[in-house]
Image (cartoon, rainbow, N blue to C red; front, side, top):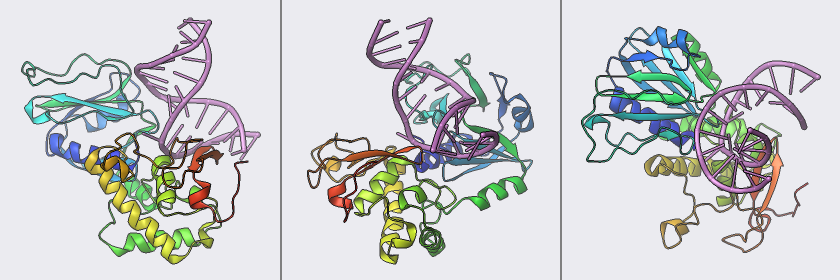
Length: 296
DNA sequence: TCTGTATGTCAAA
DNA sequence: TTGACCTACAGAC
């Protein structure tokens, strides 16, 4: 589930298993052969997430940028230092196998299965990347330019006021619907369709209100809640946005996301689903809309 | 064997 | 606003 929390977990895992390790890089699929050659044999000095993108720095200064898109995923495997290093990205994939505790000792990476764009191998284990929408090697200047365009990431800016202020300014200066703004990575980085729907529900905000129509308090609440939800997502490894799921109803993990036609968990009214700017939007008219509007 | 699906993004019209 | 793209899998035929 590649929203921002996924990539932060990925960055952490990269630092855990590959930090300060010398890596060989290859592209079994062939599509990233040139890029792999530019990082092959180098030490990975550190990985960082910004929104949904991973930036991994190497000793020569070059930076590997990976965006998983809808389908991308990383698989990991290796010796005991890789225990707990799980697959990250799109759901269940070919070649994924659970490393049992009775596993024989690690002797090296397996034959690549499927379209492996990039394989990284250390002395202790390996990582395979499949299906990313972006995978490239950048100079520090190029990487900085990409990051400068992104909005604040609640997981990076949580403890500074800068992120909150920037978010407030960017939201309240726009006439576009807040539901669209939350998905715009130049406004705020790391929120995807699930967090968008759930944030708006939890704060009882009508998705079709423009940024300008929101109060300072509403925008502040959205930011603070984004920090909470994303941090929980990092901790749990999945997106759980309801209190119910934490108590006695483990299946009710979302209030409105993908619940079209079902009764709202709070007010009982039917949840609506409609397409907005090419993405599925879910909301509860009873809880979120002062003025009822039906899906178009 | 074919189709539908997906938590994303971009370029072209 | 639309289609293209990246990949793998479940389910239908």
